[in-house]
Image (cartoon, rainbow, N blue to C red; front, side, top):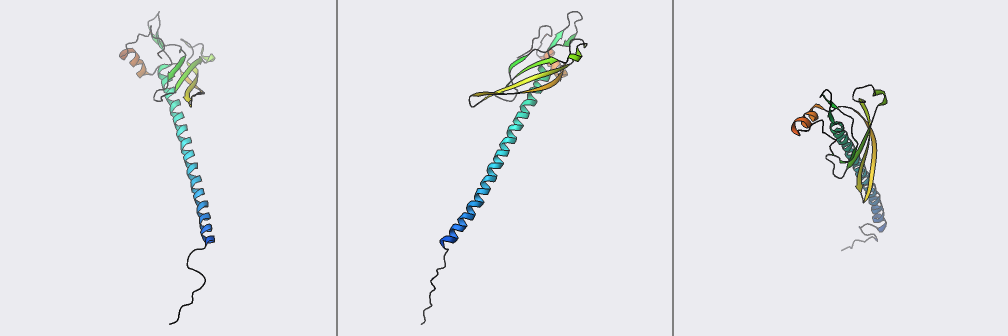
Length: 170
């Protein structure tokens, strides 16, 4: 019988081939991990922007309903919308740990309107605590001196508030 001649090469991978394969794998995995962290960062950024927009909408909705008090005219007995009181340290509805301050100033061109200016420029400051530090952001919005019909009914009928004695609620 003839013996088959063995070549000096075995049928496995050389160390060089294994190192090249591991290098390609490392580059591919690094690219994938980089994309994942970028995607996570973009998702977090979008979530924070969405939460911020939601908080601002909640503040503006709260201001539209509660910024202007109802007052009764002592002479005619007519109920009208009065000038706003400043709001201090009021919690933002639906956003735990977030508070706002608001101060209004009337449009100087509206001085001839009975009961004061119709248009109000409102400076709003949002404050929250994160990592033991108080942070804040300020924005400005414009409001008309009015109380929505539903809020007016709630104040007069459900809560039984008398417009003559009503002060701005906290």
